[in-house]
Amino acid sequence: YYAIGFNLAMIFELLIIFVNLSWYVMIYKYNYEEIKLTAKFYFNIMAILFFPLGAISFKEDILTMYVYYAMLPLGYFLFYSFQSTIKWTAYMVILVFASIIVSYYVDYSFVFEDRYIKITNVVNICIFVAMLLFYFSFFKSTLNRNDLLQEIHHNDEQGENHAEVVSEDENKEKYTKLYGEIIAYFETHRPYTSSDFRITLLADKLNSNNTYICKAISECSGLNFNSLVNKYRIEYAKQMIREGYLDKFSMTHIYTKAGFKYQSTFNEIFKKMENITPREYLKNL
Image (cartoon, helix red, strand yellow):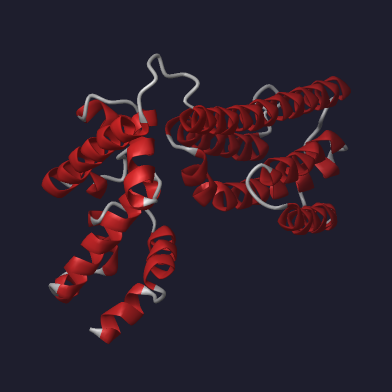
């Protein structure tokens, strides 16, 4: 586009690059569930940016631009159900036809030489293949991570990886002691108030490992690590509500101070644990 001097298309391409790089940083930094919270926003932004490029490209017979609309449902399927993906695909089809219709009403004149059209088509196909490889690698890494967690859980239950065979009573005593240290650390330092708090950080602070931490929490509380963290976060949020924080601060201040990044997550977990929404809880006080 730069070589052709097609400034309008180049602006949209640069925006697409910026959005993709920003989201790639999130994928690298955050876990699957946190990424999922931003996925719909990302795909909607990409669909909007592709729309003018689709109209421009159809006008110039660069039809390979529409392979990007095939790419979006594939990425969408990584995060959401098959039924939702079908709806999203229908949305993409509507956008494709809309961009074709719009192209007939766009009044501009650019001269695309045949060689530039061929180059652009090749580049579009290469980018499409690269994105397919990226989606595949991301999907595969997610499966591998889940398989690893299942394997760890299985090994914990069977005790196959323990260097020493210890009695059930000794195991119970060990996990009970570790669980006491976990609770003491939670009560004293409130690490759960940080949205970046992870099980690896807890294991490091207690000179333990992720497997023992998970096992201790499961054996002594019947919860997993995330459930325990969310339990403390919700209790802390409830405490702030009871103490009248909402008289001075917003609900956003409450849930972020409790360790939640997003209000949707806070509301969902609060209702799951308390059977009412935060607003209903406030009214009932």
